[in-house]
Image (cartoon, rainbow, N blue to C red; front, side, top):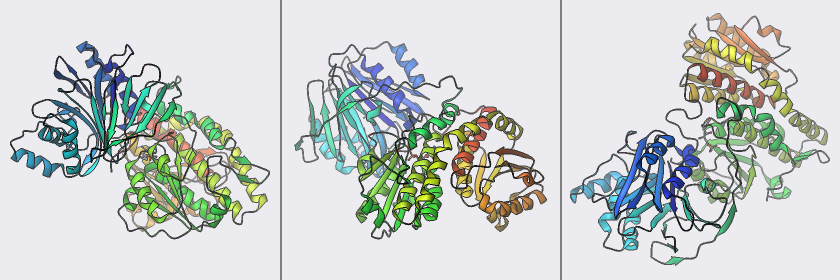
Amino acid sequence: MCGIYGHIKKSSKTNSLNACIDGLKKLEYRGYDSAGVAGIHDGKIVCCKTVGKVVVLERAVKAIKLELSVAIAHTRWATHGKITETNAHPHFDESRSIALVHNGIIENYQKLKTELEENGIEFLSETDTEVISQLISFHYENDISKAIQKTLPLLEGSFAIAFIHKDHPDKIIASSRGCPLAIGICHESHDIFLSSDSNAFTSSKLDVFYLHDDEYAIISHELIEVYNLAGIKLVKQIETLNLENISISKEGFDHFLLKEIHDQPLSISKAIENRLDYANATANFSELTLSDEELQKTNRILILACGSSYHAGCIAKQIFEAYAKIPTEVEIASEFRYKDPIILKNTLILAISQSGETADTLAAVKESKRSNCPVIALCNVKRSSLSRLASSTLWLNAGPEISVCSTKAFTSQLTLLMLLALKIARLKTLSHKEGKKFLFEIERLPAQIADILSKSSEIEKIAKKYAGHKDFFFIGRNYMYPTSLEAALKLKEITYLNATGYPAGEMKHGPIALISKKLVTIALCGNKHTFEKLLSNLMEIKSRGGPIVAFAPKNSSEILSLTNDVIFLSDSISDTFAPITYSICCQLLAYYIAKFLGKDIDQPRNLAKSVTVE
Ligand code: M6R
């Protein structure tokens, strides 16, 4: 995983070390276990590495008081080796001629390491990355191109790398395979930037290009040359980027997570803006390149995603089937990629990813593209790798989601999926009247969400009451079942408590054995269609002494006798849209429990916002 960054000064007054720190701060969503930066000073590699977040590195770099005009940097999400300063990047070769940063995984690193050790080379770290710096050095005979041409074919796995060599103090050498790496030249200063993500460039207007698999670039402030493995010089396609200078702020909230939860009336408004077509009782997407005829032909939908995006897909499955009457499959991307998938003709593939950088989702989409079926991506982050792979990308327009825990992106994904279901349903059999009803309901969502947010203090009280418990079940039926999966993920992710989402009717087939005074059941009662059935399931839990907290529609007073605590929500929320409003209740519940427990809410342990390794 991880984020890599580099800077070469041309005419600005910027110290490359500071440029790298600023870049790393924008890449911290890719991991924050440790960070490091390196450059060359007086003919020697200088390096600073720290355990923890980028601010810790920033303090250490300030203390060194060094000016550099070329530097590379890294923020790490540990894969191989413990979270220590030694395992932090950059990594060196034995003679400390090279410093190298890496995003990805070298799958055959152990074999390569053993071979190098047999040649008498000593390793310092436990990482897979160190084999790359050691190998380049091993093959280096005063020709950097040759060394890289000999090294890259030996590597199995994925990588984006950048390195400096003390014999070439004005250069950064970079390469990639299966991991994004963008190189940008600032219009104003002509400084050169290199990053895992072009959105992390700290300049506003740049000419940018991306390295493709097994290409390498030799970059100095005078010249950027890109080659393929055969050593043939390539001409790259350049695009000009005008990066919006979006200021990232908590806007007075204690955490980004709480701010993002409260952003939802606006982010949902943005998701539906200019997409509701009342005249035709349907939804329109200006970005969609697939024609109505192509969509109409769809007789199967395949959804690929991970984590919360997968849960959005599970809810969407039920909506596509109910409204568009199209059999829909949802696949966890990391599982799908190693299956021998059967993708029939006229399948529409939907790839859902907030970041558009999730390695498993990207790999699953690459695999699915062999079917030649169209792929529609749903992404929040512009210019992401997924949007470059898909036939069309529908943008969430939710604004930056900073907290690792997905909230507003998840509900925007749901909103877009609902609109897409409506569009396809209208092309199939859904009536104009039903289509219009759907539009009216979706337009009411921002107000309904504002109503949920006004219940924050009630939810906070419940959170305080139950924060001492260690185990939680979230249960629901119909649309509320996949909603319960997402609710449980929120709680585990930011509180580190044990939480499971389960279909309420399935409890009696095993999990009810776990019910005791200590295990809290959170009942999501937002599905009117199965409400009575859910009540019976709650009765079974109550009879066995399990405490129950419910989120339920206002007119469902029978729930009072079954539960220890209830939060009543508007009863005008229909079953189809309840996954959005009920999810927001669970986001608030998870947030307040995490706050009472004093957890690192925006950057929970062991996680990263964007999971760029498989
Ligand atoms: O960027 P993506 O939507 O592809 O990310 C997928 C998951 O990694 C992500 O949803 C993860 O589960 C979140 N941390 C959940 O809050």
